[in-house]
Image (cartoon, rainbow, N blue to C red; front, side, top):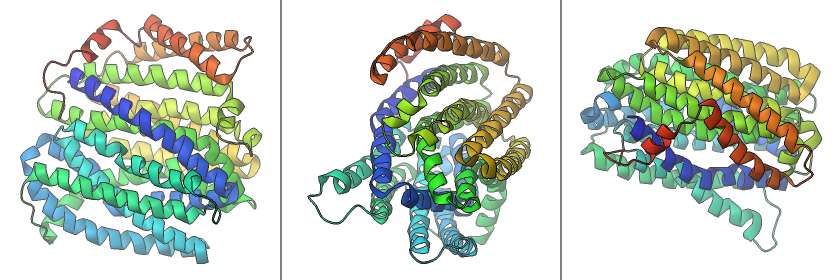
Amino acid sequence: MRRAFLTNLLLLLALNLLVKPFYILGIDAGVQRAVGAEAYGLYAALLSLGFLLNIVLDLGITNYNTRHIAQHTPLMGKYLGGVAAMRGGLMIAYAAITVCVGIVLGYRGEALGMLGWLVLNQALVASILYLRSNIQGAQRFRQDSLLSVLDRVLLIAGVGWLLWGRAGGEPFRIEWFVWAQTVAYGVTLLVALVLVRRLSGPVRVAWNPAFSWVVMKRSFPYALLILLMTFYYRIDTVMLERLLPDGAVQAGIYYQGFRWFEALNMLGYLVAGLLLPLFSRMLKERIDIAPLAGLAFRLVMAGAIAIAVFGGAWPEQVLGLLYSDHVVESAPVLPLLLWSFVAVCATYVFGSLLTAGGNLRALNWMAAGGALLNIGLNAMLIPRMQAEGAAWAALTAQVLTAGAQVALAMVLHRINGVPGILLRSLAHAVLLLLAIALLRQWESPLALRALAFAPIAVAAAFATGLLRVADLREALSFKGKSGS
């Protein structure tokens, strides 16, 4: 299982590092530069509103399905038909609720029209993720890796041409970005349908009230967990836009730092997508999960801490790679969000383990506390500190919820060695901070500093034991099946 994790993680990272950073930092940031902070801030707030209510689209079915298919793969075809009928009704409910909430919050005219398109996009994304959960559960990780980047490849081609390939014409509009997403998600959905159909065999789509009730009952704890976690991931942008007189501008300023967090978070999500089906199958077959959990935790800590230390040392220069406006205002936000990413990486490892183990009650209590804390901190800090206040709220909530998940996993699954990994992570951070102090004495472009810092970070990870030679040998050993 560790070999399967490492080999498929290498493939996932290779594909996604080629595609998603360019999309987030090139295409997405290029759209913001083209339309301005205020227009993009409105889009970001509407997108976050769609995310907050996204749970209505899924009701936790995707996460439940990943775990269920990993343990009962032959039942894929039976579940597909019944769930497909359910999801049609959920999409209608999601659209109605989201538009009504948008009206209550005061959105009108073009803003409400954009929200409608974003509702459609979220429905397409949720359908893609559900289909991918079947592929992940069947351990077809290579197919899932290709699907994970297909929509972004299409968006890079389409939006890239709209941004830089057109000769003259009217200025780029934020609506074009939204419509391009609709096309890309639609094509990706069709490809995912073909791949899943090949795995499942014949599928008969039919509404079955009894089946739907059983699935919703079993998936409800997953739905509640996703809803609560989404609140402390996405509420900050909505609260910034609604609480402040210049809320759209502040949301845009915050999003300049959040975009780096989002780009990194996509990679962290991929780790969770690998770990959940692996943990689920291992727990069913009573295989010791501690070695895999420890390996994953060491790897994500080594990478996340290095990124947070480097980005926190030169935030203005990092932001200046993408933006010329509001860089000084965004600079305090970036380091806080990068350290939030370190905490999020811990939740991707141990949250996946707790989800695979069915420990949803404990996870939901933790997530409820995190959501309430984040909303309360945002309400208190945003009027005083604007975008930086939202970043402090995010960091506090993420660190505390990550600590709770690590503690829960240690107790419920008897995971040993976590304190040792945390000490190694602290030593890793100290070594990297010393390296940064030396690099500050070297007057050079940011790219050269990054090139000098990268081997130092790798050496520090080996020196502290976060990376081990045995891990590399295992990753490069392709004996056995690692997912097709």
